[in-house]
Structure formats: C-alpha cells, structure tokens
Amino acid sequence: MSETAWGTWARRVGMAPGAVYALVVLSLTFTLFTTQFLTLRNLTNVGMQGSVLIIVALGMTLIILSQGIDLSLGPVMGLAGVVLALAVKQQVGLPLAIVAAIVVGGCFGLLNGVLIARLGLPPFVVTLGTFGMAQGLALVLTQGSSIPGLGPAVQYFNDGRILGVQVPIIMTAVAFLVVYVILYYTKFGTYVFALGGNQEALALAGVRTRLYKTGVYVLGGGLAGVAALVMTARMNAAHPTVGVGLEFDAIASVILGGTSFERGKGWLGGTIFGALAVSVLRNGLNLIGLSTSWQVSMVGMVIILAIVVDSLRGI
Amino acid sequence: MLHFWLHSLSRLAMIIVLLVALSLVSPSFLSLQNLSNIVRQASLLFLLASGLTVVILTAGIDLSIGSVLALSGSVAANFIQQGWIWSGSLIGLVIGAGCGLLNGLMVALVGLPPFIATYGMLWVAEGFAQVFMKGEIISGFPRGFRFLGAGYVTGIPVPILVMIVVLVVSIFFLRRTNFGRHVYIIGANREAARLSGISIRGNLLLVYSLSGLISAFAGLVYVSRINAVESTIGEPLLLPAIAAVCIGGTSLFGGEGGIGGTMVGALIMTLVTNGMNLLNVSPYWQSFVMGAIVVLAVALDQLGSAKMKGA
Image (cartoon, rainbow over all chains, first blue to last red; front, top):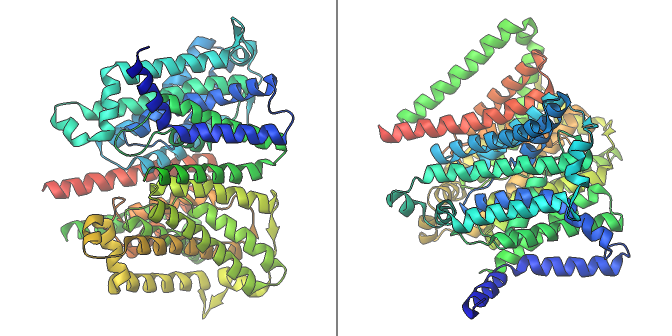
C-alpha cells in the first residue's frame, strides 16, 4: 500500500473515533467489572449477536448518507422473520422462504422510498407510519404469539460453520463486502454520497435522484430481510415484536461510526465499529446482571450521550 | 386562503362521513353516552397532540410524548395512590418538563436532528417507566384525583373543560403573543428568524419543555380517567397524536397550521378508533391502520399543497 493510501486510511479511522473510543472504553470497563466478558466464548457471542445489528446498520448507513432515516427497519425485520417462519411452516422450501423474507423487506423499502423520494415527504414521519404498519402486520399474521420450532435447516444459519467460522459472521462479512462494493465502486454509490451533499445540483445534472433515493430504501429493507434470517435462526422462532428498538441501535451504530446527517459525510467501516460498540454495551449490561428494563434506559442514555459528545466534537 | 377553506371543508366532510357511517354500522354509536365518551377520549388525544403541534410548527418533532406521558404518569401515580395528590402531580409535571427540557437542550444547543434526540428520549423514558413499574399495574386512586379525568362540572366532563381551556389559552399564545409569532417564524424560515434577532435557542428550549410538560399533564388526565397505570400506556398514543396534527393541517415542514386544526384532527382520529372498536377490529390491525393513516395524511396533505402552489 502506498503512503497516500495509508494516509487516507488513517484519516478514515480518524473520522470515526467516536465508535472506536466507545468500543475501547466499554470493553475495558466490562473486562474490569466482569470475569466473563473477555473470554473467547463471550466475544464470539458478541459477534454473533452483533451480526443482526450490523446487517441492518449497513443499510441504515446508506439511508442516512442520503440524508434520510428509516425508523421502520426494526419492525420490518420482525415482519420479515414472521413471513420466513410462516413460509417454512407451509413447507414451501427454505430458499423460497428466504426470498419471501427479503422481498417483504424490499417491498417496505420500496413503499418508504416512493413516499419519500416521489412525494417529498419527511422520512421520519413516513417511516414511523410504516413502522406501525409492519408492526401491525406482524402481529396480525401471528395473532401476537411466537412461531417456534423451525427445524435444523433454519438453525443452520446460526449454528452452522463454514471452514470453522460461524455462518452469521460469514453472512455479515459478505453483506459488508457487497454494500462496500456498491457504495464505493458503483455509480449508485457515488450518487448516494452526492444525494447527501447537494440533491438540487445532482438533479440539475440530469441524475435520476428519485430512482437512486428509492433504491437506497429498497436496499435497506432487503438487508433487514437478510437480518431476519439470522435472527430467526438464532431464536429458532419468529416473534412479531422482536425487531422493535433495533432501528434505534442501528441509527446509533451509524452515527457513532462517524456517518453524519449532513453533507454526505460517512464511512461504512465505521458502522461496524459502531454496531460492535452497541453490541458490547448490551452484552456487558447483561453480564453485569442488569434487568432488561434498566438496559432499555441505560442503552438509550449511553447512546444519546455518545451522539451528543460526537456532535459537540464536530463543531 | 382558498386552501384553508378547502381544508376546513374537507375535514368537516370527513367528520360527517365518519358520523353517518358509524351510526349506520352500530346503533349504539349515537347514544349520548358513547358520544360523550368519544369527546372525552378526543380531549386526551388533543392534549397530547397540542404540545406536539407547537413543536411541529417550529419544524421540529417530538417522538417521546407517549413514553414521557407513561413515565410521568407512572411516577405521579405512585405518590398519588399514597394520598399525596398535589405533590405527586407536581412531581409528574416536573419529570415531564425535565424530559422536554433535555430534548430541547439536545435540539437547540447540541444541534441534533429533533427526531434523533426525541427518539432517544422515547427509549430512555420508556426504560425508566419499566424500571419504575416493574411490569405491575397500579390502580385505584383517591376521589380528589379522579375528579380530573372522571369528574363533572355542571354536567360537563372535566377533561372536556380542560381541553377547551388549553385550546383557548394556546390559541391566544400562538396568535397574540411574541412567543407565538416567533414559533411560526422559526418554523417557516429559521434564517430569517435569526436575522431578525429572535432567540432561536430560547424559543426551542421553551417549546420542547412545554411539550414535555403537556405530555405529563395528559398523563395525569389519562391515569385519572382510566383509574389505572402501567408502563406501556404511552406506546399506542404516539401515532394517533402525529396523525391528529397532520390531519389537522399543520405542516410537518413547520410554520403552517395551528391548534384549532389539531382539535379537529384529534376528533377524527378518535372517531376512527371508536369505529374500529365498535366493529371489533383486532388491536393488531389497529396498529397497521394507525400507521397507514399517518402515511396517508402526510401524503394527501403534501399532494394538496403541491397542487395549490402549482395552481
């Protein structure tokens, strides 16, 4: 690697220290206060649990880069999991069930994208509305209860190993590579950055901004469908409300990772660090033995604090 | 002006259609008891949505209103059940205003996008409400406190009187005071507001604190009316409140709309909920319908105003 390339890398890392610092501080804290944190078994666990968050956060990164937001990704993931489980129970075959889950995610992305890009509606309200719709559909389809016992074929996506590496971690790596290539090596990716910079100029230059903007939400929804597979495999069940709140973790991961709401500034690799920091926080609070109710507010506060510090530093 | 009249007429038509449809569907709908019940429910939604309206007028949003209502209602209820009606209520209001102030600090001083700051607050407040309630339900409050939600003054339910007072006071403040004018200017054109010397930070801090305070007050009315509280009471209220503001004609882009419209919106949303209950629609579908209504309301409003501007 040439010297300038190293310089670029250093600057890129310098762009995302929020997440890196948070990761280091949280890891040190939990290593000091618990004996179980710094074990290979637990760290693997963090990686496995983090995979769902990372996959969703990758899509969220692109959405936020284009100056949008998608609050519906959590419930959409829940809905996709429900569809996956129902399809498996109907014995349509696992490949078709997975396709169905991804398509459901993509369709919600399309709905969001069309409403936001075509009609120019504020993203947070549109996706809050579709949040309710996805949540409602997931509850209607399951009548509010879980769909357990999906069988070894589904569980493979949690327990399986390829060359000794857990399948969820491999899926996360593949998802990262795919999104990385899309973002940094395609025209679509270039336009995503440009959408966050100056949409007016982009439109005047003859770029079909609406199409690309819609595409960003479709990609985000589709990735939520992929995440649903990992989540459902881990629990060996689909639960209609499992995704609620995940969108907040994903947004936090993206912001901690150094992607900002302004001017198309961001770094995909940072999102990984951000998501790992959030996962370490949740894992550590679990190890300490904090009840889930405390965790909800603690995670919320730590994340808000991190975002506030990050944004104050940027001034 | 034409837009305003068209808007008012279309909302009136909506109400009439809903009233006719619901009375055809269910004979019990037009009973005095059900109608008075609807207005009482609408008054609660209106309270919650009125603070939100002012936030949205500044081109902001407050997604934390539902969980702030639950948190302050839960804490207040614990004290009130011990007989400390006034101090308990006061503690609830202070917690609400405090949450709002924190939102305001994050938005006005730190410069976070409002939906991020208040979405974070949603989870923090929700978590604390859960910690405080430990999954339990508290019910049975002193008669003095029940007056707020279930009492009558000269035959009129107290929540409805509260709604009228809040409506009149907030219309006065929005239309006749500098604070109100500043809210509209900040929402319509922040740069112009800054240039004309309006304190944007101060006004935003006030607006978000007010929203928290009103959410807490709505929480007191709510707890007093249903005579019970649990940590999850706020969750189903956020979408209807946003829908009420949108249907009421307040623009999500700020600077346009008002509290009067929100009252109409709250009435429409309550009719819809009441109708779904009369028709025995499952609560699971209701979540879907609420989401769809929010999307539709925003979309139709945007299409309508785009057409008006084009004409």
